[in-house]
Amino acid sequence: MKRLALIVLLFIPILLNGQGRGLNDRITNDLSRLPAMDAVVDSFMNAWSLRGVSLSVMKNDSLIYARGYGRADGSKPMTPGTLLRMASVSKLLTAVGIMKLQERGKLVLDTPVFGPFGILTGYDEYITDDNYYLITVEHLLRHQAGFTQAGGDPMFSTAAIMREMHVSKSPSAEQLTRHLLSRPLAYLPGTTQEYSNFGYLLLSMIIEKITGEPYEAWMQREVLKPAGCTDFHIGGNFLADRFPGETRYFMHKEAKPTNAFDGRGQVERCYGGNDIKALSGAGAWIGSTPELAKFVATIDGLPGIEDQLSDFSVYQMTQRLSDEIYSLGWVDCTDDGEWTRTGSFSGTSALVKVYPDGECWILITNTSTWKGSRFSRDTGALCKNLRERFSTRLPERDLFQD
Image: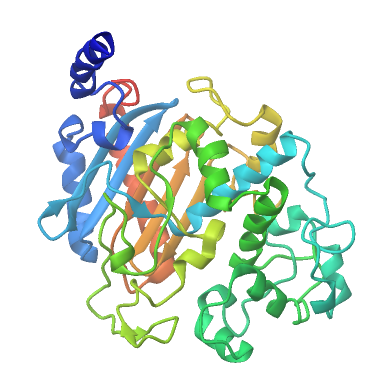
């Protein structure tokens, strides 16, 4: 016992010196400061009345800049380790989970989703359109499954769905699937594309069905932990559900209260306006920008940090087929190697941008603007401006290793 106590006492100074601490605890604002660039970010925040922004910049798999701007909550500053909702950037994580299952021989991208030879069985009695049996895993990844948002995105129309189903609480993923399968598809799978959050919920369910585990737990162990991401979580809906270290979210000043998704009355839209938790792998993940950068480093094909996907899987995810076909997980990949993933909903706007020269810029806000999802274009323009003006002035170092 004395020897064990001695070992513990010897190990404590190592912990206090920062070794063994998580990335989110270790990286602070003091480690990144470029006044001219920070002034541009501050000006952008003032122009859009943003309460807080987190920015991380990676070069050839080395984290060279990570800084929080503004406030996470009240007087509490935004830091690099602050957790934020990343909305549809979550789809990139889910796509990587699917690619890992393919590499392990658990599925192929043209595996049917429904029917006797499909992954999600037990839904035949609810299907009224035989074209559902044509949907493959790849169709879901590329938003080509035949689903439509005409009449409203079902993942953001919970109250209406509850009324249609005559239920008093938000339906489970399985209940929602059974209900939606009774609707005809909008188009033949694979013939066109229409962005679908429901399609990525089905991918989350596929991961659960194949692994026999809850989506979040399997993703944390098999996808995020191998990337060194230890503080990713499926976020909650209400302020009371906030995780330790997570920012508060804010609406723009013109925003008005809205009906809660579960009928509990009027709420601030970013806290109860939508059932975020129910989005699962379509949009519910929270994390920090440095950990998100480290995740990207494991799927980018660069030699700095070992990839968790094969070169072929990285190629499949980033191959550009045409202007009319989404990439796998990424929202757009150009022929010259520029990859983009965006995400937004009330209280959040997120951007991941990978450039051909090995730079990756990640920016997430904790405040809505009146432009909604179109605000991603403005954050993209900001990152382009910062990159053109300050890229050569950023330090050559690796905050992942410091």
